[in-house]
Structures are given as structure tokens and as C-alpha cells.
Image (cartoon, rainbow, N blue to C red; front, side, top):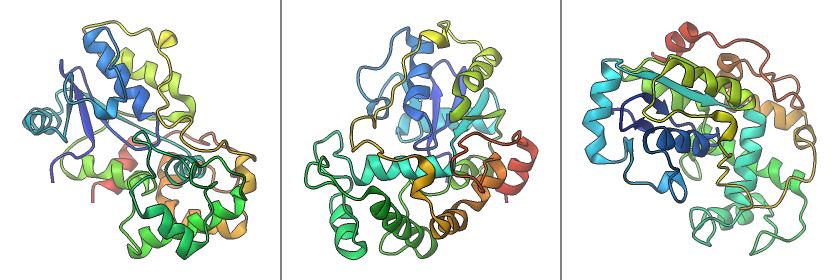
Length: 272
């Protein structure tokens, strides 16, 4: 099984478990910069050199040895489940991707046909009922996660605890889990705990939101997308995310965490 979704600087200053839709582009670019004094030219997910990734065969033995021996500081980053699933909808379902096409080929036509989801036309720029379409997408996301139908769940809306857990289950241990909503403070704590070849001034680092502009702008406040049924579906899918990462299920309008993450609890519950 190894350590899928794990990135490590070439200097082995830090190890990071990617969780999709949780500031991963910015974190990857910070890691790249901390070794090379420059940012990767393009989407960091496309890099094949300059940053060790589990998806690169030559990186695997290095990552495995480091993580198994806990040689470097290891961290990950999480996000409020309400805003994360909304972001996935606007980026992956409504948006046109970097290659100029729809995400995952026939995924969107399947959603349009089987679930009645609207996505703003062929170019994603048309007017449509965002709230109704999002709630229908939420049913689809639940179906993929609960029953793996009509397809397996996608990494962008599968539960964060699932991503986080593979690192633990295969022998890794996190030193910190930071929140996207308090990114600067969390990332600064990571940087303070490690030594990088190149100093990183977090205040001077741009935000690399690679999904920005892919899809239509969100037209309503977060809480407007979630009625009682939608909240029930979100809780069914993400109960463990809310509990472990201390997010407020009762109030979709509150994106901020409501307590501190207990790392021992995370390791105990996700390491089984």
C-alpha cells in the first residue's frame, strides 16, 4: 500500500500528506520553494522533478524510508466539509479543467442525465440554479461514497479522514494537522518546526489556487446551499471529518473549527 498522496521535499526537510481541496497547491509550492528558491512554473500537481511524490517511482523508497522511520516532520491540512464539497462542485463539476475539457470525461453528462444537475452549459458560464444543482450533486456524491455507484468516490469529495488515514495505517505519524481556514498560523507552525535550505517568508508567498476561475462563482452564502436534507447527507458522508477535525456540523455558516485537533485521537481512530 505504501504512502499514496504523500509529498516530501528533496532535502527531506518535511513530509506532507495531500488532501485534495485543502490548500494543496499552495503547500506544494511552498515546499518546492523551500528547496529551490523559486516556485514551480505551472500547477505543482504536474511537477515530475524537484519534489518527491509517491506517484513517482523513484521517490517511493525515499518516502517509505523517511516516513517509516519518522525522520522528518510530517503534516497534513484539512478543511470544513461544507466548504470543501461546495468547492469540489464548482471546480470539478461546473468548471472547465486545465485541459479545456470537462472533468473525467463522461462524469458531467452522467450527472446531468441521471441526477438532473445543471452546470451552466457547455462552457460553464450560463445561468443555472446553483442551489438545486448542488443538492442533486450531493446525492450523487453520497451514492458514490456509500455504495460506490454509479462510480467509485472521487478523491476531491471522498472524506478527508480517508486520505489522512492511509498515512497512519501504513506506519506514518503526523506531527501536526493544520486548518485551511487558519492557514497562515498553521503553516507558520510547520515552518517554525523545520529547517529548510531556503528561508520561507510566508507573508510574501502568493496563494496558488489552481481551481480559481475553472467554474462559476458561488452566488450565495455557504449556508444557503444546505437545507435539512443536505445537512443530513453531509453528516452521513463526513461525520468522522467533523468529529476529528473539530468542525461545526450544526452551522454551515461557521467555517471555522470549534476546538483543537487531538493528534492522539486522530492516530488512534484512523490507524485501525
